[in-house]
Image (cartoon, rainbow, N blue to C red; front, side, top):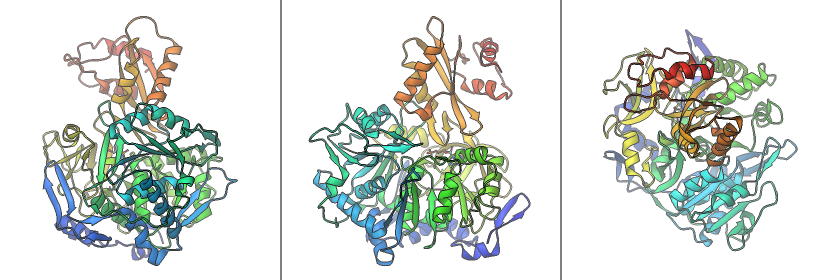
Length: 638
Ligand code: PRX
């Protein structure tokens, strides 16, 4: 069972096709003829307490799916699987330390824990519609927490555990969450990270009244009486049944913050019905999930990939999946390959940064990985070299490689080749998922022919799992997604083009967002933080290509007066780490006298970037200070 090469692309062979859920193009024809009917049909296979009366309602720029329907995603993930899969393993937790044993939780184990914890949350006063903050590492309690919130209709807002206390604070302030679930600590590259300490710092100045702590690393932590509770103590003695809330399809399920062009992160809102349908069916069809599969997505639960494919998607399909706590290359560079072998992983989903890192550290892989059937990538464009290494060393020239495109905003994968159909073409993500309509437009809104680069957009009826708004910020929702081409065309902020067969290649972001090791970081947010230093007059941050991480931030700083020194650089880096996270720290800081600006005063970041990459600078006639270019070039040594 494998793939065969035809020209520059690869296709599933007959045997693979035979097994796949989707192996005929007719699904595209059927779905695209009437996407609303297509999703309507798929939605029916989930458990609804009450059926919807309208599949799709569009009041631009807002839209709704399955209106009038009542559903609970936790019920669909757990209760629905009890009959057939009660004793099947749902979750395999692989601790970072190789000396520690894994934990396997069956569907029934998970069900009981989630129910108990849901009851505990209720007892603490959490009600339907309340926002609960989750600041947790990659441990089963994180998944239990998300599912328990969903069960009682609380809205979870997960904050990536590597984010700094300040980053946690602004997210908690925005949602006004009253309860935070966290952990004492966790292991990262053999060290214990004291997460509780960061949580204590982050909740200062927020509305958090209760903190729940899962014990993981048993590190020393400070406890505040009447505010802090241990997860294990709370579930002790709770009933293992908690009635699932019957949620309206359009009730909020979760808020997840992401970076945009401007300084502040925005809370992307996802709702119960549509998200459930899309998470379930994209996971099933794209990863071709069958009952004997072992699925592993390396994405952290703090990001959308973690939400949809390390939590909800696999459980909705009754799949067994792996949750790994630590760094994929710890304690040896092939740790991830050992995990694949240890559990017989059949589907492996990771990011180009990880693939490039594996390639650099390992080159030739000794593990056979013969259980793998599908390998997949997400989060950033995958370059040709990394694609081929992944294909050769991991997929052993027999696994379909899926390059899946999507965003925090889209809730689930929207563009990819399907494994039973193909083609798998290096650096191309594929075609829109059945029922998804996309286009590539020029700045005036004209649809572009093959090989012409333009803005990737999504057309009505969009997808059931797409965002329903930016939390408490209608204006941002409209400005970011529905202004460029009017309120009926979703603007992705990605640049892309199609080949002659309609396969889409994602070129990169059209805005000031950069992808650092797959993490979405706003250069505007970084600039705001750097500008907080009173000695700094202004700064510009750009993303520059990096061999492993894809892109890294580089800052250009203009001082008000005085001479720069190394200490200042360190202080800037420290400030970024404190306000956001280590992942966002600039790889270089250059002190310059001036930044290139247009006559109207706009900083030309594009020119700074081109100075770095060595591309043609283009027309400089709009600059008010072209003479600064030579000086900057000298400073950066290019
Ligand atoms: O630029 C695209 C890039 O990641 C952005 C979305 O980032 P985020 O919301 O963090 O979600 C990432 C995981 C779903 C997109 O606007 N991106 C995502 N997938 C791909 C990609 N770029 C190229 N190829 C992909 N497969």
